[in-house]
Amino acid sequence: MSWRSEFLAPNLWTEDAWRAPSAALFAASAVERRRVAVAAARLALSRNGLASDDVAAAFAALSGEQYGDGPVRRTVKARADAHDEAYFDAEDAGDGATAAAEFVSARALSALWFALRADPDDAARNALYEARHSVDDAGQSAIAGLIALELDSTG
Image (cartoon, rainbow, N blue to C red):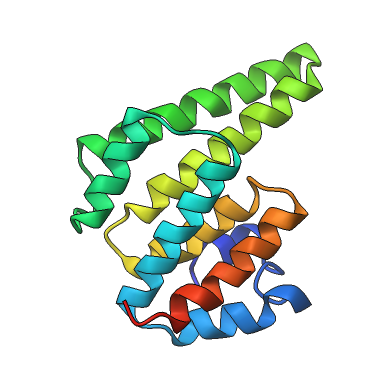
């Protein structure tokens, strides 16, 4: 398969804790996959305290089914890229605490950027990949649980 998450982390979908959620995601409809992408991004951003007007605008776009490239998505990408740059700078400076904080912020914003993608398969897979790498173990368990919750909901 050609999904980014399987290329970057081939064991992401085969680890025991992720086996059932990933099987459910493989079988999900496009609407369900989109819900999973949005929920994963929301959880990642909330766990990392990244509320802002830009984030609110992105979720408003998602609520309005405005997917794909556009100014909102570009703004989210710019914020994610800025956190990635700050991560690299902190790494180069030997500031591990700042590097870690910037890394998870970049991943959480990238989850939102991917959730805005036009293709719901790509959105779900990559938003989950980024969200999972932006949270601690408890957050990862929450992400696995939200997959089941979103796929079981009737909305």
